[in-house]
Length: 595
Image 1: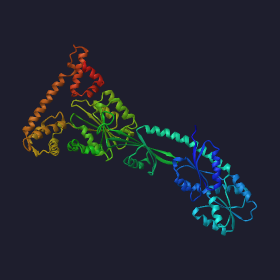
Image 2: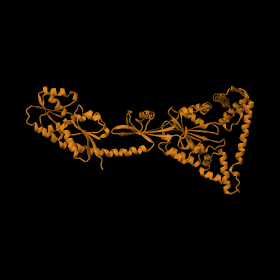
Image 3: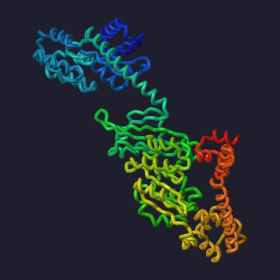
Image 4: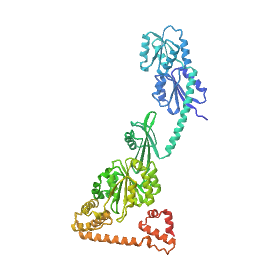
């Protein structure tokens, strides 16, 4: 059964009220929930006092309708004064000998003026500018010699008070029927639109995104879903940028969540509007995103970390030597041997080059699978397509050759249009042919910062040692005041297979075991000897456990189990990393180990 349209009727004179009730009773699609008499003085108050949930539209006429428009958001339909209604009045006053003035609101007078001009009647028409000034208008009309006033209810009422003759502009039964027809037609049309909007709202509400629409001046046009004041403030800050851009993306961290904001500028009703889609993703930990292998950091989190500050002074000279590469917007490739702190160096690049609102995504390439790669290269919410974002791909050398090639080729297709800043680190070995580095530089347009091995920079070891000892004192509350010159000589002569990390480990060990406020040469000689012995043992173990030493006389099952156990040992019994290296699932790995 079709729902009836609920109408609140406000009639400016009594006979219209009765006609309105009678015509409404003829219709099956209209329910006149209330019909009240209300002129200019009390029509708006009737609407204010009535519960808006009990009606759908309002029906009125003339000045009363205009006053109601100002106090409600509901649609207000007007009962017309039809041409037959006007002809009846013109015929009635055809033989009148005095001066006739027609006084009404513009929404009625325009129609009267057209008919008067067509019929060439000599009637003067006056617009009511304000009902507060109506009495003075009628007094002026009286002084000008007019004796008859034709108008709506309020005009006729004031004319009678001034002793003038008057005729009420009456809307007949057909005019009221036409008004109800208009209500049924328009309401049916907008009900369809409302239904469509309801489906759209239901669709967007079912998702994780909120929608906020603003004009470029900052006025909110509509919103769908919950938008915090902080996020709305961020959206307003983006608006000036949207005057020149059609799209803009931004990502922020807030209270354990990742806020994704995407802005699109569209033109609607001759006005530029900005539509913001706001998504909120809960981080699985302080930094971990929903995609394994990718973390996200704010500047403050890196600035306040002890690990970051302890290595910052050690890397400062190298950062200063490459200021031009840091200032460039081109991607940056940082290469170095094991322990050269290339990943820490990349974080320092972010801290030096980023704005306060920027965030850093760290992709651990050892855990980069096809799902994460597809998200990064294809998803519109990828940090690669977001402004105020740095994306660091750590240890590209961990990718297999085919996967690295595919990644570089896909990234090459749109590297110049990315709004984010890209950083890469690539680990090399002392005897490396650098083919992986060359492949990156040939495919992507980027700057390279090679971190020299520590053995090639013995002149820097003294200053780096003193800086790191100072950091150890700050972090651990140590009171080491110096290191013997002979100890420095030992450090400068050491080959440092693990570079800066190795130096930090030796100094940390020496500080923890120092018997005085000075680190002695004896302390350093002992620790370096232990370090060298450990390295020799590791190399011997690696030579022994190379695949060439596999006993191929055993069954395939025994060889498979042996390989799995070796990889597990190399990964410190971490089954997730071992399974990734072997190219199998954790379930498959578990089944092999159960055999």
